[in-house]
Length: 180
Image 1: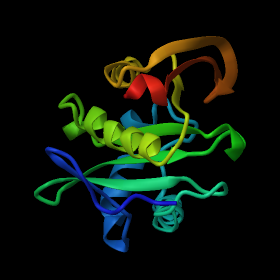
Image 2 (image 1 turned 180 degrees about the vertical axis):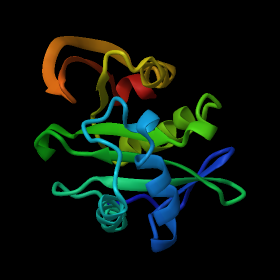
Image 3 (image 1 turned 60 degrees about the vertical axis):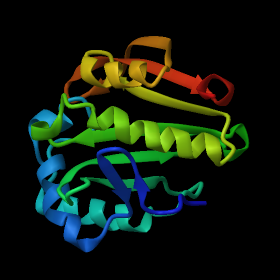
């Protein structure tokens, strides 16, 4: 299952990843500020090549792999990454949403705009629930999920040992009937 690529919003174009996206993707995921609240450390060039290959293969949503979208400004500049994927059995019709944006393009509403487009696609495709999980100190991502109308469902206190410390996790979600 896949969107009718590209997905266009007022200011953005979400499209499948291509080989030409290596520089932008590596800049994004090799940045310590971007990966601060993610599970991984900054990517090496080799790790970014592997990640790009997965994202190129991810233009279609399957149970084995998520749907990955390169996010460009309408002028063609790569600004970020948005994903939606199964992290529960498919019969639950529930998808997890994720996004990361280059620091120079954060704080401008691009993450909300891109995430809104993916959530809209998911509900249009018949999914029942979309949710986001994030490190509890990641207030910028929490704001994006709240702007989408998601409700905070859970705070899991110090539930994961990540990067040498106990981290807490927030879960936000919205149902298809709430999205309409």
